[in-house]
Figure (tube, rainbow, N blue to C red):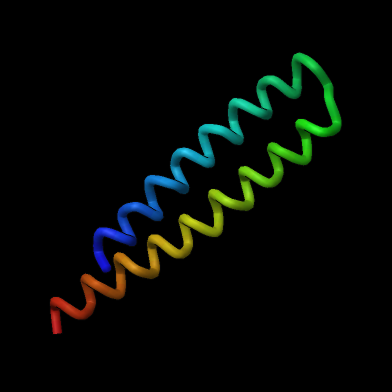
Length: 65
């Protein structure tokens, strides 16, 4: 389960970097469709970050007690 948590954190990091890339491209093009894609990437990053943190904390708590 620790590996799944770490993978979730990696996916969150990748999604956040894609969000930053879309946001930067959005400033250049000012395209509304890219705005929706950037928001989707940010939301995905937040979801996977929360899931990854919960899994990692859960596994660490299980090994301590």
